[in-house]
Length: 196
Image (tube, rainbow, N blue to C red):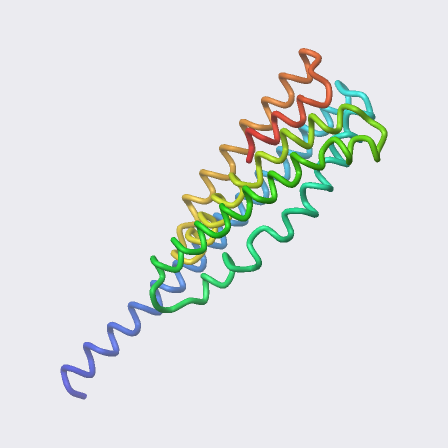
């Protein structure tokens, strides 16, 4: 074996170990994020159920269902496609970011326009206010989705762990405090906005 071949084999072995280490590390942070987020939300929801009326949850459930239905069209799968892109990654991230944020603002405006009609359809005046507040999450969600794609593409799972767990913990705690002080359905909404 030549010296050059030995160096090449050693570089390949180091790269393989490095990739394995990145995968294991990434799995750990994603798994830990899921555990912390799900446990926190489970406990907070139980506590909120003791503090809020069922109708408060119902208004939020309808509004979040509408928001989730609209957000299906938010990025057209472009953020996910970025993960597989090999060339011009920075330019592609910028283009997708601008498009997704602009389209999310358009969807937000549609929700603003139709919130009154949706509230009348479901027969609850509180729904319009909740939809208006939740519509704000579309543009901010576009920013975080593109950031999440960047985190995934570059295997920066620890950064994702910090961002997600911090926002979820703060949002859930805010919901709990606001519910305790009698904010009703808006306590869930403000917690969701903070967590987003």
